[in-house]
Image (cartoon, rainbow, N blue to C red):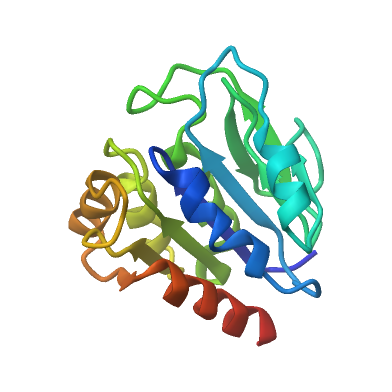
Amino acid sequence: MSERAIIIGTSAGGVQALSRILPRLPEALSMPVLVVVHVPPRKPNALVELFAKKCPLPVKEAEDKEPLANGIIYLAPPNYHLLVETENSLALSSDEAINHSRPAIDALFETAADAFGPGLTGIVLTGANHDGAAGLKAVGLAGGTAIVEDPASAEVPIMPAAALAACPTAEVMTLDQISNFLKETAAQ
């Protein structure tokens, strides 16, 4: 298991944004990718099927107590917080919504920051609330790399702007720059 991981959080406009990033990840990725997308709680998650068709990496819905594996994209299931346990396994929680969201970006980012510290790359993309702001700050405080989608080019700028306000040291990038950064990171 890698000591590195990529985490991505998004909401409104997120499927389109992820469609510009996830398919461009290299097949030989030596770390896991964990993704939270705000989705309706009672609808089946069609994102796994959608991204499995587009991505060179396996895409799956995260399961409780599942060990993390390199080169897999894990999507948070609807209505559950996705957490990283310190022994590098995943956990699902039905605790209260955070920032009106379950799954919440902050829940994943804060637990992943504890587990991976400086080996973590956290990315907040387009969205319409403040979820992810506290989590991205935790990534930065743990020594990880904090990135926000440029609010000027985000479909919905509220979420990346809030994350940047909470973590002013975050790198601001367009979707193409994020994709290129992840390819470079994967090659290291």
